Length: 297
Image 1 (cartoon, one colour):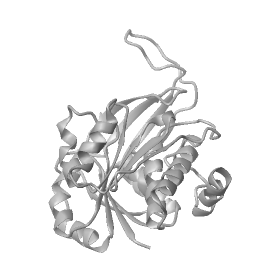
Image 2 (tube, one colour):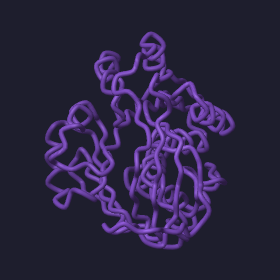
Image 3 (cartoon, rainbow, N blue to C red):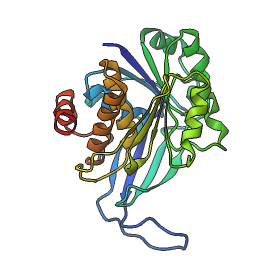
Image 4 (spheres, rainbow, N blue to C red):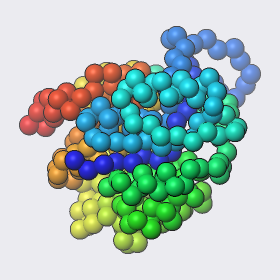
């Protein structure tokens, strides 16, 4: 099995569940469920899912040498994730996420990490050399590693999340990536954007549409559309995009066709929304295969 290096993305978050997100005017709100304080962010989500699926995965991130950073270390260790980290003098990044029953979210960045913290580049280069695939998350510090990854000619997978055309922050990731995942939330003309990126020599582009399913564009010009599986009972959308990404990569590493990769991704996304965690508590390769036979056989 190939080795995956996930770079960037660990926070410690407070999840607040509301019947309705606040609208403009000052108001007092009451949570609809108990506060959930837990591990968060895109790197943690991908690493947890991939590890549970038996993929040889290493996660590198930047955390604070503080209470929240050490909680992240413990949670990832308990989950069996191979976690490498550097300390950020600004401390651990923390968010407060407000979620409604439809999965809509308001994220409040309580603290933010350094844009370019000091990194152990010798150790990072060794991790890059040892891996087969780099998952490069759109966390500020990871930009300084692009040239190092390209030096060793490792394929780059990136997840642009709710990218919009006016935001130039993502451009270095778009230019570097071989495989791009993105949400259509801020991309109403996503077909045109996907075609433009594919003309730049990308291997694959996948665009997710929440409850509207997902669209893939292959290097050969094939468009693949797949709806969601409606059977999964919704609890929490936090981490669903990272689970979808992980399901796709899991299937890809196991030699599946692109359409089957989309199916595995859909299963992982569905399992995630039926859980309050970034990866479903009972997630395993065996469980996923059972669901694949149930929904797609």
